Length: 255
Length: 236
Image 1 (cartoon, rainbow over the protein chains, first blue to last red):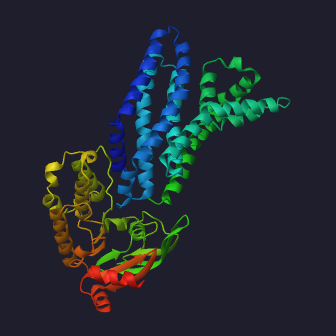
Image 2 (cartoon, each protein chain N blue to C red; image 1 turned 30 degrees about the vertical axis):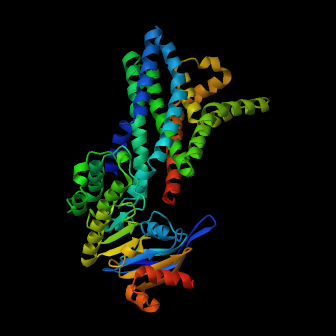
Image 3 (tube, rainbow over the protein chains, first blue to last red; image 1 turned 120 degrees about the vertical axis):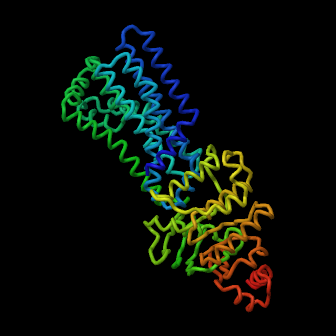
């Protein structure tokens, strides 16, 4: 298994898109930190990059990569290797390489300029989001044989998580505004890893007062130790479930 | 060695394999013959576990191949169209395959074909720059590289120049004499004459017959395989 991961990572790191992505993140984070005197304001600007661009690049790049390595997968499947190992190695290689790109592009500037709790939280969240969206991409890529369709599914999933979900939640809130929704909101937020990360980071930034009564409930839940454990577990599930589903599908797939 | 038992596979509505039962033994050289789309490649891919049959099972050395993967170390497979990662060089592909197959120990490799095809001078070339024929040479060399007990060759000589296909044929005969099982599909029947001992004829996913070459010659009264098969096809 280690051998395959080695070849996958070597292949991805030679890829120009990943290098460009790293450079792009590095330019954004360095320019934000150098232009802004107030580092916590800088962090807020960086938040949107982390929550929008990182998932987008991770999901689309990974989907395309899986489709483009169909030859490589075919070659490996005819060798004495377990399909499970091939798939997990592919996932680990992609997740490792993209997380590394994030770490170099945003993690190192954060560690240099604002090594505070908020900064570290954002670093961890960015890494986790990278891995989660690679996992979702694996699921999108195994769902269909058609590359165009697969990339379409990946883009739709990203749209759903970063735009549509919020719209649906707002719609839901307005429909049921006569009822107490605060606690349900905590549960609903677990269905979107991007929202979950945003809430966690905003709470840490001490601007949760702006979020009103819901913010207080969030603070109460996510601030507690058990809340933090539950959130970590939910984020882990966001990695494990897509990978497991895609693996189940890949094991039965005809190549 | 390889036993297929009532193997069926459907792709949507198309029946690619319909209740195929075949027994292949050591020392045999079997030609899989049939029109395009008759299920030859699907059958080969199900032996390799790349296609999962809907029903029926395949055993390799007495063990069911479902959920097994180690048996593939005894198989050398040459695909119809060899597809390799574009940005790897020939040398890297060979190195990677050795690395994957070695499992911590040094295994003897058979690099005759690599030398005969002159691939050693091309080791630094990237796969994306290779011609179709050179790709085929790489596929063939990889199939024979680990001295496997079973060789599965899907259209081995398609795209090879006459010189290279003679080299490959000689190599196949050498391996057959060593007592290996060789499965070949080909549409160039004239070149199979001096290679094979048995014939499997498939049509529309059905197994029409599985005979030894002598039986086929006797039944049809033709000496040449191409003529024998033509007379069978006419009868159907």
